[in-house]
Length: 288
Ligand code: NAD
Image 1 (tube, rainbow, N blue to C red):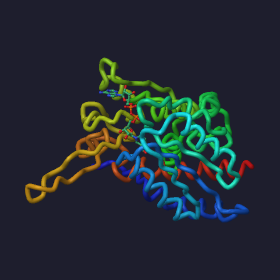
Image 2: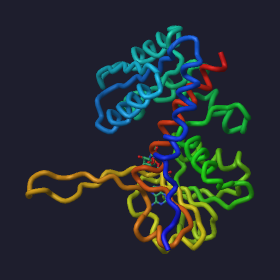
Image 3: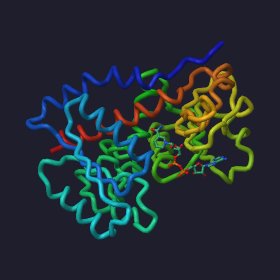
Image 4: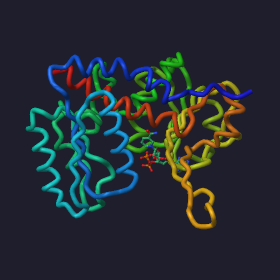
């Protein structure tokens, strides 16, 4: 038997009317500023997804793009201009930044009241503390919403999170702890991954390694959340054009025959991340 598909597109679409209603109840159209240094393909496609979703729910997305060679001080000045601009309610610094730039210095220059990604030191402390009204970074919030919409409660469950990055893994770990799960954190130095994942009720994979989770890593009844987004080069059409395929970290075909529920890639956590970013924006707007 196949697993229940935890459908991120469907869950996102169900929540769009409510979010659009919150936007239209504001006294003026909100604006989200996205600051991008450089022109990476992956960043461009994430920004395009945010622009399209903003349009759908009636939020302005102001894309400020500068050259990859931008000095750090100039990037911080742009953030400060956005901080001072009363027409802007949320600010995102699109990551990764060019290698020469200190991410923390730039991110920490965002006003906490406009920190829609919840990645400034101020926001991190709040979600680490499990503060009730703390904003969570969008991917972690999206996973929480998706699980709740399928009535999957983390309370008292054993959760294995694979990945410990500050950007995605750690917010997911904190979210699970705040939901009262017992959390095991696995990473690239974990000795026996299958041993850790097999005893979990829920496995959340945030590694960015296609095929990392195979049949041997899972057991009957588990819930599998695949956060990974990896682009594989597919077949060559007519021996010339290479097709690209988006896959997660989980071998979906093999794993979905064993477990109880699973997110697909694409169409699982990705759409929930975009939705959650705008839910964060609305929370910031309504706090004012
Ligand atoms: P990262 O490279 O910063 O971190 C990867 C983590 O995975 C590290 O902590 C590392 O220890 C762990 N890891 C790597 N190889 C491993 C292995 N063989 N066994 C166990 N652990 C291993 O990456 P990131 O920024 O955290 O992103 C992870 C993935 O999530 C990427 O594919 C990224 O594209 C994706 N992502 C998806 C969304 C979404 O909305 N679905 C949002 C953000 C990131």
